[in-house]
Image: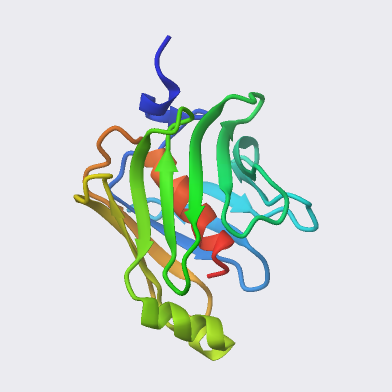
Length: 193
């Protein structure tokens, strides 16, 4: 049986482009992901009023294909598990590393092997964004690196009234691009961007 972490498809979705654009709705944590040709490829929305954070992801027809769900209730620094719809088997684990004004996440395999790191580039900008909603208009930037520190991509916010950002992945290594894109959307929502 093929290791699910090495599969390019998650829930029948394959995201092989090097760049995706993500748009958040104005009023809720609802997201639409577009490929470089401008085609809608994935949708997500944060479940409201849940004891555990949960993000179902939908294909273009509105079918749930996978979920990111918190392991614990109201955890400041915790794990979020990506599973395919209809399965309880974890595919990836997103771990928030507790830091002040510098967002750091680790993407791991279910056995705990580190696959990638996602970190905000500017603690100063993140500090301003946390002080007032006025600064939330400042675009956020994250780098995506291997555990060895090699850059494999970035998440770059655009200056806009609603959250809009680009995910660029040059070489995902052993991590499927689909998983990195899903992780980026979940991290954006969990960080309140």
